[in-house]
Image 1 (cartoon, rainbow, N blue to C red):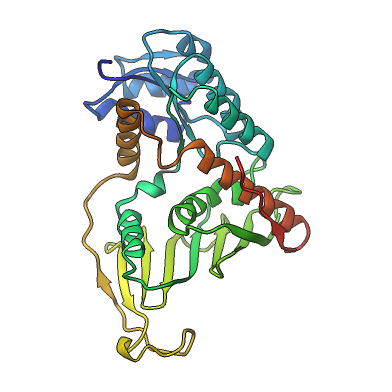
Image 2: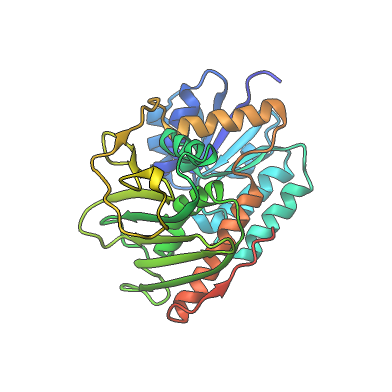
Length: 338
């Protein structure tokens, strides 16, 4: 195969971000952009005047010149578009969440399993963020000690949505990082929140994941927050790592104990000395790193780090959280089999 020719399906803000990184990557070619909205097509033409811009996704699915598709449309359309692309013999990168219902996510997984020669990858770009990659390496090398808990905040004054709750809009970012970090099954999920603008569409959510190995993860998700926050804090028995995507020093490491050699019992009070040690990171855009991984998988046949099975697990967690929210925080067991 020559350089893969890629079509981006969806020319909204995020679709055009995908188009930009594909356009700029010498390892692939931006062959076409698809959107049903004429205004979106006009914006796409302005960004990449030399690229074919069409309104019907079937035109790219049926085009033998196209090797792969990136699906960046509204979440409710992800499954059918991704399945159609796979059925047409295209490699697929589909944005998060891959589905808004667990049954639909499993249908996509079944379609992917029936075409093992094709790469089917979920667009969980935070897994490819250099700060998270470094944090994950610290955890794997046990520089943090035993993992105790994770606390994440993804909040701000976001666009009010009447079609998708904040857990489904923002939650996949944190859940993808948790899946990559914690190698343990989730026993149950609890969620509480508020639906302020439409019944059943949460604008604020507090989600707690209980792992079978004892760790806890707590997520604060909101589009009604006073200021934008993007933090992911991992507490270990030796050190605490804090990933702040809005800070100049995006990853900092803190001592968990004043005297690590004394090794007192976990949860005993100890001082943590700010500001922590900043970890040097490469200046890599996560979306570009994600595309590089997608292209690597196409070239080698390797299984993506964020494959469809991983995406199904995330939808299963979100499904359990949504049911818990409706039951005022009752713990809900998670069935994560894809």
